[in-house]
Length: 106
Image (cartoon, rainbow, N blue to C red; front, side, top):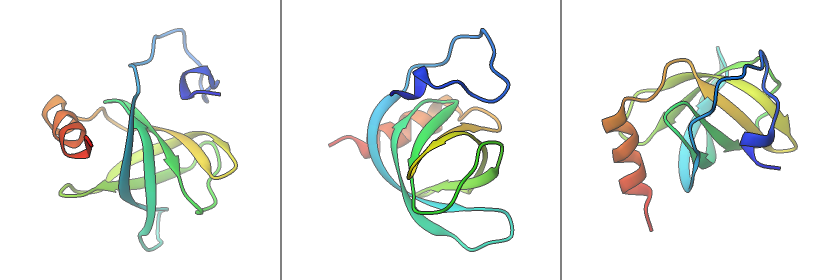
């Protein structure tokens, strides 16, 4: 099941931005905890699919840090096993998004 097919918290009729397949190592933390290594497997300016051994639940606030950037706040929208669909608190700036996509390209 793709991220687009998942029903998020606070479901809306607004269309989602297309996600692009990537494989990016990131740092992840829950509030008040230390950073853990995780991976992002798809990304858009508004959200991402996370693969992590960290126990996450829908509605949980997390911080994700892409290499070279400060941590960004996001909300877990859904989980399935070790995967989680997350939405950034505020969208990535287009230049930041394009940089992340460029450096993650094979």
